[in-house]
Length: 330
Image (tube, rainbow, N blue to C red; front, side, top):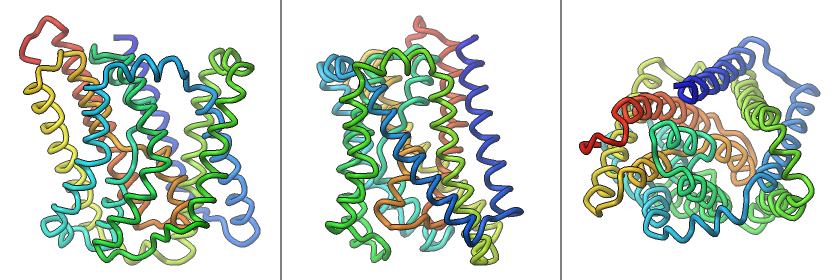
């Protein structure tokens, strides 16, 4: 139960930081020179985020996890095929509820990789296959650097959604802002891995602060431009319900397909948590690289989906934790 409380505590801190960032962006938005300063800080934080992620990721764990190729294939299938197929297919059902602009944000969510920290944490709490979850979530994030821009270009062109410019400049920007720091982190891992391991709390604060900066600068720009006057409460409520419906469908698909394929209970838990989640930590910086700006029509659905998945996964992890490995029904 201690590990479960730690997960909730971290989620609460992260959620609190998001709420504070939103409020500050609404009440005390930055503009002019201050906005330029925060943009610079945000870009620097993103580079540091992916550099430290490169330092943290063990090549040995990736190689070991890849040996469980059936599980890894399932997670990648749901992350990069199921989501990008199902969310556009559901567009005629849900787009009239949330509007075309916000549904474009959900299409962007479909293109993103899985989360890392929370997928591993919830898998651990629920009694799942943690080494496999480490590998699945890590490989998903790494592949997302390449696959997310490709999927965005494909899906946004097919759905007549404008704003995605996947050209040479975009690829180069992704390389120097995300891929290059990650590679440098991997190269310097031999010298820094022990320091990173000893300062996990500091690294966690860095990860979360980066997202808070992204959200604050985005909400500030939206406030200054008058974006919020265009968003209605029914739209926001519909967005929450739509996110919950998509997540529930994914939970059912990941669980019952992995059960039908006779995966063990531990592997099924890892597949559910790693295959059903989308990363805000990667999605927000990637948005800057792909679109050249933080678009609130894309960021808001990502934030909502992220919060819905945290709350739903926390409940699911609690249920699996309470039942334990001896319950054959799970």
